[in-house]
Length: 143
Image 1 (cartoon, rainbow, N blue to C red):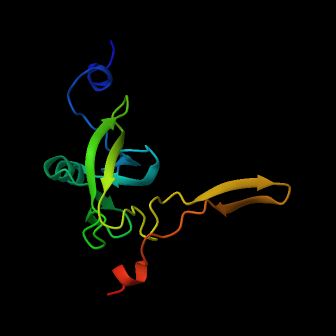
Image 2 (spheres, rainbow, N blue to C red):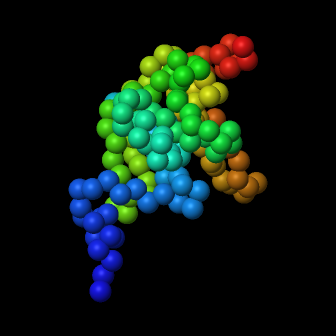
């Protein structure tokens, strides 16, 4: 006998997020216009609920162990345009428009993915993509 819950998750219309053992689901955040990846974060049930209620991205900060309204400090609020969920409902794809400076990364850059991994005969290293900061994090976070 098959798992009806799995069938409901994969084919149904009910939101049945599969949170991990820490109560989190992964969220891939992309720019709503370019579909460029901006960041990867995690949501717990409260963060997902607040995101759906407010239309602004909320996450669970694993490093600070608290709910995090993205952009509350920097002004770079992520306005949610669309949320999709993967086939087994354990990952979210969150399409956003960035307010403020237009930066999703705490380093001041638009995207957290501002370095590429390159590998050659000397080994693997990180190479900047050339994405310059859009604001100085010291001016925003060190107040």
